[in-house]
Image 1 (cartoon, rainbow, N blue to C red):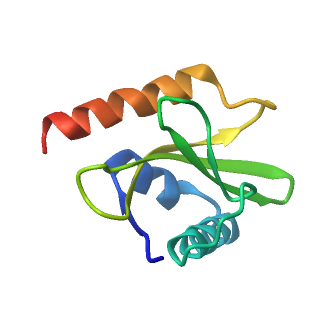
Image 2: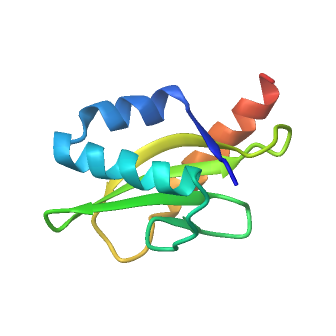
Length: 109
């Protein structure tokens, strides 16, 4: 299984601002998912609306990149935006933000 990840503007900006080693770890984890590695420690479905989370931990910090599957194209995951996770659960407003970005994405396609 070969999965392609497409980064929307907010996601790319977030990745660009991450500390170098954390960014490398996130991109490595994303590449594993791209090769078909199924591991909920690095890529996990968050809710029934179809929002997924790429995950990376570095030096006791947790980094998250939210995404969704583009159902109009084969094997494409679209990364919406990222954030530094500070609580046990993913904040509801982050999931809602990803859903809004996904809705806008489909309006422009």
